[in-house]
Image 1 (cartoon, rainbow over the protein chains, first blue to last red):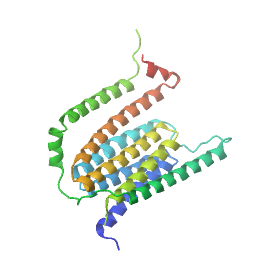
Image 2 (tube, chains in turn purple, blue):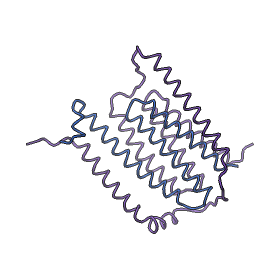
Image 3 (cartoon, each protein chain N blue to C red):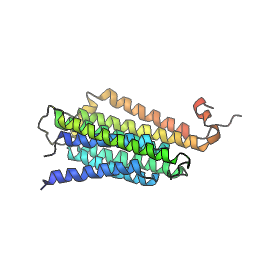
Length: 172
Length: 98
Protein backbone atom coordinates (compact mmCIF):
# COMPACT_ATOMS: atom_id res chain seq x y z
CA UNK A 1 0.00 0.00 0.00
CA UNK A 2 2.25 2.81 1.25
CA UNK A 3 5.99 2.75 0.99
CA UNK A 4 7.70 3.05 4.41
CA UNK A 5 8.81 6.63 3.81
CA UNK A 6 5.30 7.67 2.78
CA UNK A 7 3.88 5.99 5.89
CA UNK A 8 6.41 7.87 8.04
CA UNK A 9 5.50 11.15 6.37
CA UNK A 10 1.78 10.65 6.89
CA UNK A 11 2.29 9.68 10.52
CA UNK A 12 4.38 12.82 11.13
CA UNK A 13 1.91 15.03 9.26
CA UNK A 14 -0.99 13.61 11.28
CA UNK A 15 0.98 14.27 14.48
CA UNK A 16 1.61 17.89 13.46
CA UNK A 17 -1.90 18.66 12.30
CA UNK A 18 -3.75 16.88 15.10
CA UNK A 19 -1.59 18.68 17.63
CA UNK A 20 -2.28 22.00 15.92
CA UNK A 21 -6.01 21.28 15.91
CA UNK A 22 -5.76 20.63 19.62
CA UNK A 23 -3.93 23.94 20.14
CA UNK A 24 -6.64 25.78 18.24
CA UNK A 25 -9.68 24.12 19.79
CA UNK A 26 -8.83 22.83 23.27
CA UNK A 27 -10.82 24.48 26.04
CA UNK A 28 -8.10 24.16 28.62
CA UNK A 29 -4.88 26.06 27.96
CA UNK A 30 -2.83 23.34 29.64
CA UNK A 31 -4.20 20.78 27.16
CA UNK A 32 -3.41 23.21 24.35
CA UNK A 33 0.20 23.42 25.54
CA UNK A 34 0.48 19.63 25.60
CA UNK A 35 -0.96 19.47 22.07
CA UNK A 36 1.66 22.05 21.06
CA UNK A 37 4.31 19.56 22.18
CA UNK A 38 2.98 17.03 19.64
CA UNK A 39 3.13 19.67 16.89
CA UNK A 40 6.68 20.68 17.74
CA UNK A 41 8.00 17.11 17.89
CA UNK A 42 6.23 16.30 14.62
CA UNK A 43 7.78 19.36 12.97
CA UNK A 44 11.20 18.22 14.12
CA UNK A 45 10.43 14.83 12.58
CA UNK A 46 9.47 16.50 9.29
CA UNK A 47 12.78 18.40 9.31
CA UNK A 48 14.64 15.12 9.81
CA UNK A 49 12.55 13.60 7.01
CA UNK A 50 13.79 16.35 4.69
CA UNK A 51 17.40 15.63 5.55
CA UNK A 52 17.84 18.65 7.84
CA UNK A 53 19.42 16.77 10.72
CA UNK A 54 20.94 19.68 12.64
CA UNK A 55 17.77 21.73 12.28
CA UNK A 56 15.59 18.91 13.56
CA UNK A 57 17.65 18.53 16.72
CA UNK A 58 17.84 22.32 17.18
CA UNK A 59 14.05 22.48 16.85
CA UNK A 60 13.66 19.83 19.54
CA UNK A 61 16.08 21.60 21.88
CA UNK A 62 14.92 25.19 21.37
CA UNK A 63 11.18 24.62 20.98
CA UNK A 64 10.57 21.46 22.94
CA UNK A 65 13.08 22.24 25.63
CA UNK A 66 12.90 26.03 25.84
CA UNK A 67 9.87 27.73 24.40
CA UNK A 68 7.35 25.07 25.42
CA UNK A 69 8.58 25.02 29.02
CA UNK A 70 8.38 28.82 29.08
CA UNK A 71 4.80 28.70 27.77
CA UNK A 72 3.88 26.03 30.32
CA UNK A 73 5.26 28.23 33.09
CA UNK A 74 3.23 31.15 31.74
CA UNK A 75 0.09 28.99 31.65
CA UNK A 76 0.62 27.80 35.20
CA UNK A 77 1.37 31.30 36.50
CA UNK A 78 -1.83 32.75 35.12
CA UNK A 79 -4.52 31.55 37.45
CA UNK A 80 -7.32 31.00 34.95
CA UNK A 81 -6.61 28.26 32.45
CA UNK A 82 -10.23 27.57 31.55
CA UNK A 83 -11.53 29.58 28.63
CA UNK A 84 -14.98 28.02 28.51
CA UNK A 85 -16.75 30.83 30.31
CA UNK A 86 -18.72 32.99 27.92
CA UNK A 87 -21.12 35.70 28.91
CA UNK A 88 -24.64 34.32 28.88
CA UNK A 89 -26.23 37.10 26.89
CA UNK A 90 -23.92 36.89 23.86
CA UNK A 91 -23.87 33.12 23.80
CA UNK A 92 -25.69 32.41 20.53
CA UNK A 93 -23.84 35.13 18.66
CA UNK A 94 -20.56 33.88 20.13
CA UNK A 95 -21.21 30.36 18.92
CA UNK A 96 -22.24 31.65 15.49
CA UNK A 97 -19.03 33.66 15.16
CA UNK A 98 -16.99 30.66 16.23
CA UNK A 99 -18.62 28.47 13.61
CA UNK A 100 -18.07 31.15 10.99
CA UNK A 101 -14.38 31.36 11.88
CA UNK A 102 -14.01 27.58 11.68
CA UNK A 103 -15.73 27.59 8.28
CA UNK A 104 -13.44 30.36 7.00
CA UNK A 105 -10.39 28.43 8.24
CA UNK A 106 -11.53 25.26 6.44
CA UNK A 107 -12.19 27.19 3.21
CA UNK A 108 -8.79 28.89 3.41
CA UNK A 109 -6.99 25.56 3.94
CA UNK A 110 -8.84 24.00 1.01
CA UNK A 111 -8.08 26.93 -1.30
CA UNK A 112 -4.40 26.90 -0.35
CA UNK A 113 -4.17 23.12 -0.85
CA UNK A 114 -5.74 23.34 -4.31
CA UNK A 115 -3.45 26.25 -5.21
CA UNK A 116 -0.35 24.37 -4.05
CA UNK A 117 -1.15 21.13 -5.87
CA UNK A 118 -1.84 22.99 -9.13
CA UNK A 119 1.16 25.31 -9.08
CA UNK A 120 4.19 24.27 -11.14
CA UNK A 121 7.42 24.42 -9.14
CA UNK A 122 10.85 23.98 -10.72
CA UNK A 123 12.17 20.99 -8.84
CA UNK A 124 15.54 19.33 -8.60
CA UNK A 125 16.37 15.89 -7.33
CA UNK A 126 16.81 16.13 -3.54
CA UNK A 127 20.10 15.00 -2.11
CA UNK A 128 20.46 13.62 1.41
CA UNK A 129 23.79 14.55 2.98
CA UNK A 130 24.85 15.57 6.49
CA UNK A 131 24.29 19.30 6.86
CA UNK A 132 25.94 20.26 10.13
CA UNK A 133 29.42 20.95 8.75
CA UNK A 134 28.06 22.89 5.78
CA UNK A 135 25.78 24.92 8.07
CA UNK A 136 28.70 25.81 10.31
CA UNK A 137 30.76 26.84 7.28
CA UNK A 138 27.95 29.04 5.98
CA UNK A 139 27.47 30.69 9.37
CA UNK A 140 31.15 31.54 9.68
CA UNK A 141 31.61 32.74 6.08
CA UNK A 142 28.75 34.31 4.15
CA UNK A 143 26.36 34.72 7.09
CA UNK A 144 28.92 35.93 9.62
CA UNK A 145 27.37 39.37 10.18
CA UNK A 146 23.77 38.10 10.73
CA UNK A 147 25.18 35.40 12.99
CA UNK A 148 26.93 37.95 15.21
CA UNK A 149 23.96 40.31 15.12
CA UNK A 150 21.68 37.47 16.24
CA UNK A 151 23.78 37.02 19.36
CA UNK A 152 23.25 40.73 20.06
CA UNK A 153 19.50 40.27 19.57
CA UNK A 154 19.49 37.41 22.08
CA UNK A 155 21.49 39.45 24.59
CA UNK A 156 19.15 42.42 24.23
CA UNK A 157 16.07 40.22 24.67
CA UNK A 158 17.64 38.61 27.74
CA UNK A 159 18.39 41.97 29.38
CA UNK A 160 14.96 43.27 28.43
CA UNK A 161 13.21 40.25 29.92
CA UNK A 162 15.18 40.59 33.15
CA UNK A 163 14.35 44.30 33.37
CA UNK A 164 10.66 43.63 32.70
CA UNK A 165 10.22 40.86 35.23
CA UNK A 166 12.01 42.71 38.05
CA UNK A 167 9.72 44.60 40.40
CA UNK A 168 9.76 48.34 39.77
CA UNK A 169 12.42 50.18 41.82
CA UNK A 170 11.09 52.13 44.77
CA UNK A 171 11.61 55.90 44.55
CA UNK A 172 13.63 57.18 47.53
CA UNK B 1 6.29 9.36 -3.58
CA UNK B 2 6.39 12.25 -1.15
CA UNK B 3 7.12 15.54 -2.90
CA UNK B 4 7.27 19.24 -2.28
CA UNK B 5 3.52 19.81 -2.45
CA UNK B 6 2.86 17.39 0.41
CA UNK B 7 4.99 19.48 2.74
CA UNK B 8 3.48 22.70 1.43
CA UNK B 9 -0.05 21.47 2.15
CA UNK B 10 0.92 20.47 5.70
CA UNK B 11 2.50 23.87 6.22
CA UNK B 12 -0.51 25.72 4.78
CA UNK B 13 -2.95 23.88 7.05
CA UNK B 14 -0.65 24.49 10.02
CA UNK B 15 -0.56 28.20 9.17
CA UNK B 16 -4.35 28.41 8.95
CA UNK B 17 -4.67 26.63 12.30
CA UNK B 18 -2.23 29.13 13.81
CA UNK B 19 -4.28 32.03 12.47
CA UNK B 20 -7.40 30.36 13.87
CA UNK B 21 -5.74 30.07 17.28
CA UNK B 22 -4.76 33.74 17.27
CA UNK B 23 -8.26 34.75 16.17
CA UNK B 24 -10.25 32.70 18.67
CA UNK B 25 -8.18 32.67 21.87
CA UNK B 26 -8.81 35.32 24.47
CA UNK B 27 -5.75 34.59 26.52
CA UNK B 28 -2.38 36.15 25.65
CA UNK B 29 -0.54 32.88 26.29
CA UNK B 30 -2.93 31.05 23.96
CA UNK B 31 -2.25 33.58 21.25
CA UNK B 32 1.46 33.08 21.81
CA UNK B 33 0.92 29.38 21.05
CA UNK B 34 -0.75 30.43 17.80
CA UNK B 35 2.33 32.46 16.91
CA UNK B 36 4.46 29.36 17.58
CA UNK B 37 2.30 27.44 15.09
CA UNK B 38 2.79 30.17 12.46
CA UNK B 39 6.55 30.11 12.95
CA UNK B 40 6.61 26.34 12.56
CA UNK B 41 4.58 26.55 9.36
CA UNK B 42 7.03 29.07 7.92
CA UNK B 43 9.95 26.84 8.91
CA UNK B 44 8.49 23.77 7.22
CA UNK B 45 7.92 25.83 4.06
CA UNK B 46 11.49 27.15 4.00
CA UNK B 47 13.11 23.78 4.63
CA UNK B 48 10.88 22.08 2.03
CA UNK B 49 11.83 24.58 -0.66
CA UNK B 50 15.47 24.32 0.34
CA UNK B 51 15.35 20.53 0.10
CA UNK B 52 13.33 20.05 -3.08
CA UNK B 53 13.91 23.31 -4.91
CA UNK B 54 17.58 24.18 -4.98
CA UNK B 55 19.55 21.72 -2.96
CA UNK B 56 21.21 24.62 -1.13
CA UNK B 57 21.14 25.27 2.60
CA UNK B 58 19.75 28.82 2.52
CA UNK B 59 16.31 27.75 3.72
CA UNK B 60 17.75 25.88 6.68
CA UNK B 61 19.89 28.88 7.65
CA UNK B 62 16.89 31.17 7.55
CA UNK B 63 14.90 28.68 9.60
CA UNK B 64 17.63 28.76 12.25
CA UNK B 65 17.41 32.56 12.34
CA UNK B 66 13.62 32.29 12.62
CA UNK B 67 14.06 29.85 15.53
CA UNK B 68 16.25 32.41 17.26
CA UNK B 69 13.73 35.20 16.66
CA UNK B 70 10.92 33.04 17.99
CA UNK B 71 12.90 32.20 21.11
CA UNK B 72 13.63 35.83 21.97
CA UNK B 73 10.08 36.88 21.08
CA UNK B 74 8.54 34.25 23.37
CA UNK B 75 10.93 35.17 26.17
CA UNK B 76 9.99 38.85 25.97
CA UNK B 77 6.28 38.12 25.60
CA UNK B 78 6.20 35.90 28.68
CA UNK B 79 8.14 38.54 30.63
CA UNK B 80 5.63 41.21 29.55
CA UNK B 81 2.64 39.00 30.43
CA UNK B 82 4.19 38.29 33.83
CA UNK B 83 4.93 41.97 34.46
CA UNK B 84 1.43 43.09 33.44
CA UNK B 85 -0.20 40.30 35.42
CA UNK B 86 1.80 41.15 38.53
CA UNK B 87 0.41 44.68 38.74
CA UNK B 88 -3.07 44.73 37.23
CA UNK B 89 -4.29 48.15 38.45
CA UNK B 90 -1.37 50.09 37.04
CA UNK B 91 -0.43 48.33 33.83
CA UNK B 92 0.12 51.67 32.13
CA UNK B 93 3.27 52.23 34.16
CA UNK B 94 4.86 49.39 32.23
CA UNK B 95 4.59 51.37 29.03
CA UNK B 96 5.40 54.79 30.45
CA UNK B 97 8.26 53.55 32.59
CA UNK B 98 8.94 54.18 36.26
